[in-house]
Amino acid sequence: MNETPDARAACQALQEAAELIRDDPDRQGSLLSFGAAGQLVVTGDMHGNTRNFDKLQRFCALERSPARRVVLHELIHEEPQYPGAPDFSIDLLVRAARWKCDFPDSVFFLQSNHELSQMCGHEITKGGRSVLHDFERGVHARYGKDTDNVLAALNEYIMALPLAARTSNGIFISHSLPDRVMMHSFDDSVFLRKPTAEDLMPGGSAYALVWGRYHHPEVVEIYAKRFDAQLFLVGHTPQETGYEVVGRMIILASDHAHGVFLPLDLNGRFTVAELERNIRKFVSVE
Image 1 (cartoon, rainbow, N blue to C red):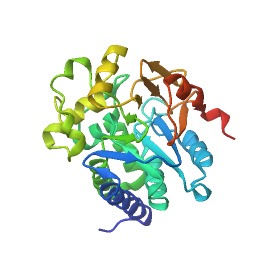
Image 2 (image 1 turned 60 degrees about the horizontal axis):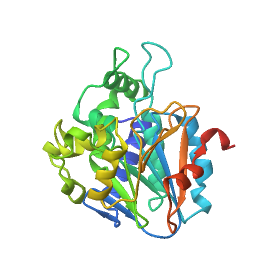
Image 3 (image 1 turned 90 degrees about the horizontal axis):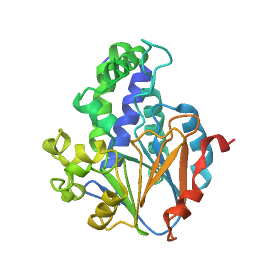
Image 4 (image 1 turned 90 degrees about the vertical axis):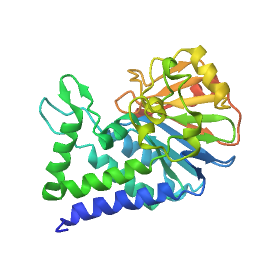
């Protein structure tokens, strides 16, 4: 394919990560399950923030913490450094894929609206700019003539992503929850199978899950009963101070200087208040 070595390595990392994600023994359909042992570190949207990712890797120290696992989502589509600049968040995604390859039993990913939109070509506009176009310009700046190969490997990775995860102690983790208006049309069985093309399009259940926003405690309560969940951990909705509590749900943001992550023991039972006390700011990690 006449790839440069860097492009070949990036494609290999993304494709190997995709294979590991698809073949995870603790995955049924589009749902990951975590048992009752060890610690789980949950993040929010990261959007290319390599500084926070560096700190996350230092905190997790997976090379000497085999009982620790980490969940990531929404790694791409950073805010460019200046108007007209390309988006280099492909760098973070490739690094995260390599982390998965190095620690296949410890690093996990979930589907998000930005990854899904990148794969499907659903345009996202922020501040008048085309987010997908800026990202693809960044990939081209990094990989030149091999851009198409890297984007193809990226799409393979995105297509492999599960929709949600649940723990044995009742915590449900996903990028978001469907909006109130999608409550009756949302098909819960999407978690137990591979999403169809219709699921991934506007109006589909996978699309509704990752794009839902502006939740209220009573809506969260309804989904808790439907999904047999005690608590929800999600991202998606921007949080200037790092997180927000909405009834049984905590919204985490990991993409800026006030970003946070949440370590939790898989063998305990928690209230929302107890989980809130466990939230860590990235700035606290040396």
